[in-house]
Image (cartoon, rainbow, N blue to C red):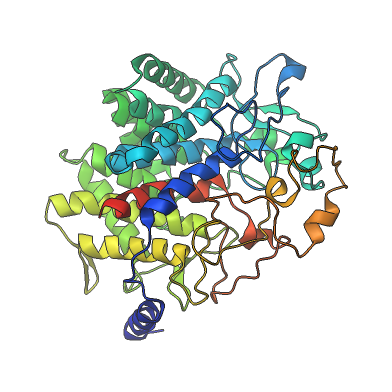
Length: 466
């Protein structure tokens, strides 16, 4: 498709779907944060707002004498994967650092969401020589369909930065002691534990959360956050020395729980903006922008006819939210310095980057060919049969009797809507043709995850006030 054809298609899609129409970003923001309360593991507090969820996994880690209670279930299953959990917490913290002033009454709930994760990460790194990367047997868990409150599958702990460092800056103005504790642990983990958890946990973590991109990007990502948190020359030198070791074959438009390349460049370009060596990071950021803008001659992502950013694999909305977040964040220094980006003969202004980011948010909230919100509980039409055990099974209150591993199959296969509303959950989203089946079995499209919502919190906070 030529540049003119691509622009024409996207332009007509925008007009047909009313992308200029206003959404209630404030409502969506509140619900996107509320979602995390539905993903909590452990002993729930009296302030729990998603009340159909109850206490679960209260003995995690006890079989080896370690307290690993708490944290988040990553998606629609009942396993705790530290790798994607850490990325989710990092992105929540980054959202607050960039756009926290726009959160208003949602700020306190956001801080609680972050601390629920960091409290667990402190536990997972509390034993010298170990980082607990996973709790639960994913194969046993995925063969069952049961509530987290009923789990009788093995809760085996498996042992193998950035989240702690980023969160330390969030808590610094309000709880300096907790902030210092997070930062100290972040430095310890980053400096001592280097290597791929695939080497020891591959049979259990893969294929669910393999570190496909290698671990060097995680080390640079962690050091980049420690640089922002401490300004220490050691971390600046580490980033500059090791950024060259990252896999050059990866697309510039890569950022998520596994590959951190684009996020590193945007983050470090901000931290070193006035230094001579920041030019290399700004160059990489320009390459990222030109890889994502639909009108760019070097665009490397696809767009659906309705205008949704598409990358291969499941849970596509993770890419739409994460890459849009980076576009929005990078637009800020461009605007401040009155700069534009040249993608061949295409000129991209800061306003254009914001416009593309907003188009993705609006698509998620309902400005799409199906006129359907992909956030549960937002809008008149949203997914009702999401791939989520707790949401799809009757609550403990409604059905106090134990539901075992195979006992939930009836609820999985029914065509009835899920009985429990997981408010704020954003599902994997439609396919490249803008189609969505709303099928519990179609987990690649109907399963929500913590790492889809995390960047969306920052996006919604910004658009709420702009």
